[in-house]
Length: 290
Image (cartoon, rainbow, N blue to C red; front, side, top):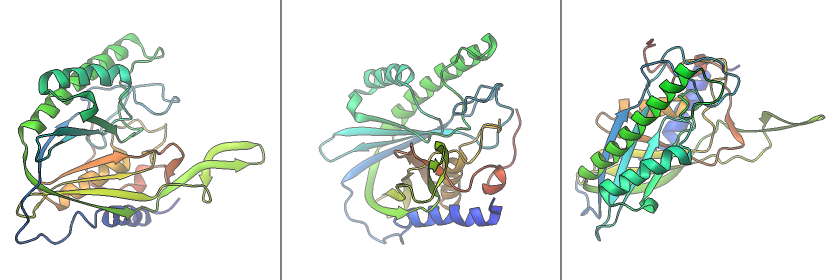
């Protein structure tokens, strides 16, 4: 296992390279904005123990909070008045059962069509499940269902807020590179396992969208990676956003007032390397308990 300091350098290299475009020197005078962008965020950290998503081996609810979870929205409007919205979240993902009723309410309240709403989750394996399974005791299943309903309400309100906050903005984009995604389809004499395959294909590109006000000041950075948020394993029972959550927190800490948003790519065959414990994640938050 690499040391914490070594992995911190890897993580910082990810953030700095991927966000190179986002933190260009602010322009003294910006061109007339062609877009309007609205931003909103809401904390979605469960305040009660819930069963967690991602690892079938877990057999009990969460046992604390290592890092808060968020849902964030970025709404767009072009010069012709066409609108759309991107919603990101520190969750494993939205199933159709959860997403579609939520989007139906958004369309009814905002006039957006379903094709104008993009939902993307970081696929963290240290977030709550939104679908109570048969193995959950009745009390736990009830808490999961209540959390899911509350989350749906929060996301609908989040989109409404973002659309109500549309302001002139300039958009720039670029692509960075990240080195820690590792192909996890390892070939062995007895077959393919979930392991480490340095020769296997992975997507190490990091798309970045920079959102600035007419004065050039950074308002938001939307960036992505193609890697499972599985730095932590199935034996961990504390909630956090994994590397995606920490990277967003880092960007926001370095740019007060700006909103950082993470989008997950097609990460089915990619895991972070190294992985295993909180010791290889940066100490950006105080430890929390319920």
